[in-house]
Image (tube, rainbow, N blue to C red; front, side, top):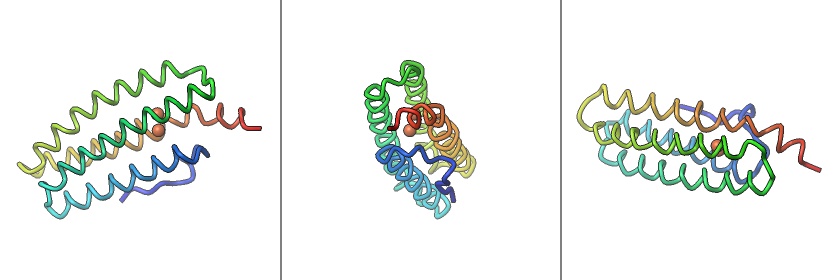
Length: 133
Ligand SMILES: [Fe+2]
Ligand SMILES: [Fe+2]
């Protein structure tokens, strides 16, 4: 089970809430996979992907409004992650077939969310803090 620790807190209410929600969804997916509910898991993974994409758009709007100088680079990072999510959906398709695919899906999802999504966002944390009155 993955938990949201303070280390990941950006102090941007809406974005932190999104990250928390994504962790919740990830834990739900992992629990489904562990229980062998692979049919339900596919739609949950799709939901996770849709929510991630919506989150990226919210985050980009927030960073644009804040005048973050690394905006373009961060948007490019999000585009790469959108591609990664296509692979995650392929894994989800195979999750019903075998144990190996289920394990790969779990690993991919955890790595994707914790390293690619949440940890990378720490890049703009100090910028946002400095901007705060
Ligand atoms: Fe984010
Ligand atoms: Fe991000």
